[in-house]
Image (cartoon, rainbow, N blue to C red; front, side, top):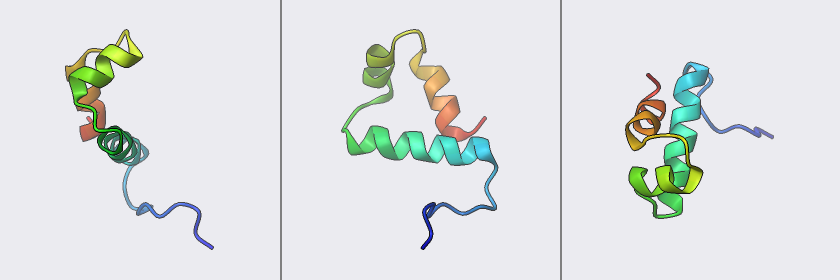
Length: 53
């Protein structure tokens, strides 16, 4: 049974970004709202993390 359905050909940074975006969208949060909730990280930084850059 495959525990990780993500494509292993993606770099770890891209997989993290994809996972973060899916979780954020599942909760119905914008990047700004997530930034306010986690504190210490700007929405632009979180956006770059989601893009894997």
